[in-house]
Image (cartoon, rainbow, N blue to C red; front, side):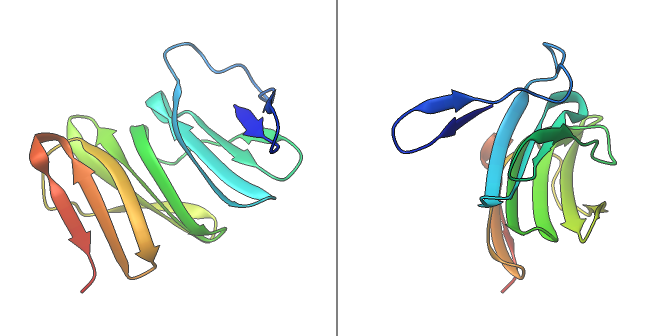
Length: 130
């Protein structure tokens, strides 16, 4: 994980070594003191403003993308056991959401807690909210 300070990139060490197959795929920073990075085989890390610590999302999955609105409201999309995977972070836990398609989900963008978009394989575009 690297951090840009306005002039240079700085390398940050991880709390634990992430195995080569468990690469991180996406990162979202809500503030200078809170961020989440997720990836393959349930790899996950949380930033507290000083260092990264390992987290384990509840559902073993490949997390292709993450989008957090606040420290208590975030989303992850990807693929789990040959099924689409949408996870919602509520306060301190992940909840699995129902997905209307069976394609690998690649990215998510939430405008707010009631409106968002997901894109995926095979041209999938999903809209959340009105």
